[in-house]
Length: 284
Image (cartoon, rainbow, N blue to C red; front, side, top):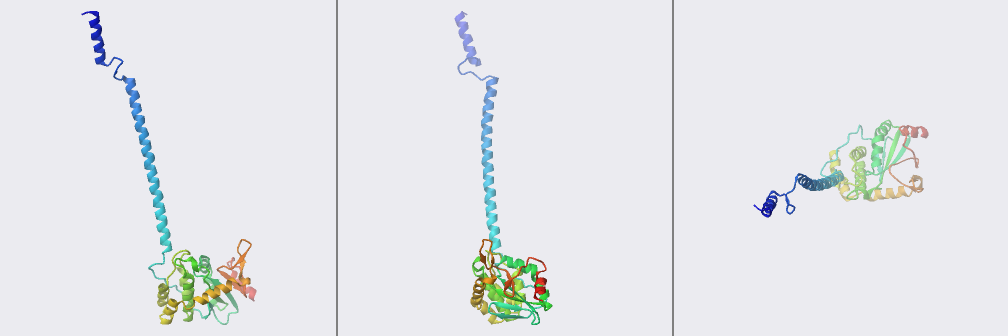
């Protein structure tokens, strides 16, 4: 076999074994480099997928939080719907006398009269009632004080639908006409609606009266027709334009707010736990 033939055979063998330069099979180093490239490519795709999944999860969590918040808010706003107002228990229905949109509670022998201006939707009025009702009741039963409640509708637009402040005040005044003001008043504060939410509607107020024994047609009709609505509005207008009842609003201005507690036409502080005793002592 000639040298040229041997060289040609050798060249063909090298091509078949992959040793040649054209279309060469990759060696171990090349295969390792290629595998790393594939792994890197896969790793990059996996990271992208992970980021995508985490992004989707985050969106779902946020959406769930928003939906949960909306549902919770709506449940708070509609907490009074399709339920009855529980009847509060009171030791005694103290004597009461209605005059316009005011109700005087207590015994004739009491020497001190405390005026309380309130709105049944006012959350601070609710706090005041929870904090002070027991002490006021004790002093009322002892004949130490009388309390004149001024029912106003300062927050009338702050229920949804609007109008609860007026409806509640009107119903309480009608309850006063039948000697049930104290119990009706306590019932409305014990389960006070949330400001900005749904108040008790007129039928629920009628049903509360029925549960207390206020079954007269005059009571129900008075609630339906808003018998004392104008008196409640007039009481509020009078209070907010009475200079002696205006207090610092924090911006250099003076304004009327609820609750306002006054003695002899002048606001008194209720910040101290013994404020009632102080009022009685000062009057003596």
